[in-house]
Image (tube, rainbow over all chains, first blue to last red; front, top):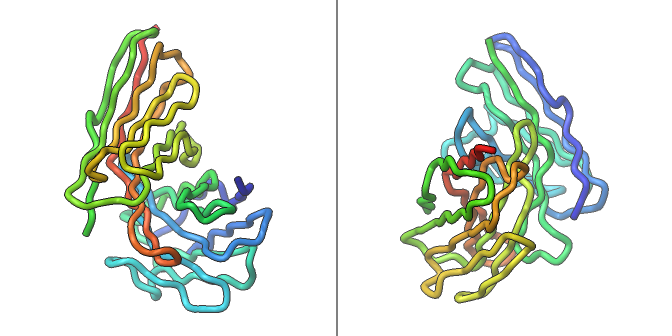
Length: 115
Length: 113
């Protein structure tokens, strides 16, 4: 499986500010996925990020709120814009396995607390 | 959208007991995955199931892909303290290149020594 590093691992943010989360993978991958895990909840897919194209967002998530960059095959960023306390969550970056058999591997996540 | 119903939501057991949890859905999935998440960590893949009826083991863990492709279970035998955590099932659907992974609500396992 790939080694996935996320920064920051945690942060405390003020309402109305924006924060960019970075995800670095140790190998080239076609697709990267961003998930949100609200406190005590399961994982919800925010968007799929392909290199060289616009991210594909799931229902309930929009680009203005969660802009994503994918400048190359090993890196992606997710920005949480104009944050409110409801955005307090763990944000997780994930990538597929080498043989595209459907498994996803996750980074350790970025835990955001919005005051 | 697709939903997975995972049960139980939580379990409180004694060390050494066996554990069973399951996921059901009204939708068909191509692959079933089971993950474990420890506090402060991302989910870690435990077992992947690719065929209906498939039964797969990984140490003390055993999982099965339901014959209808709409359900899966995970068993843990002889539980130990490090089994504590949240277990998630996940189902994969869609065509290659446009597949999506849907997660269950999780089963929180607590073990009394």
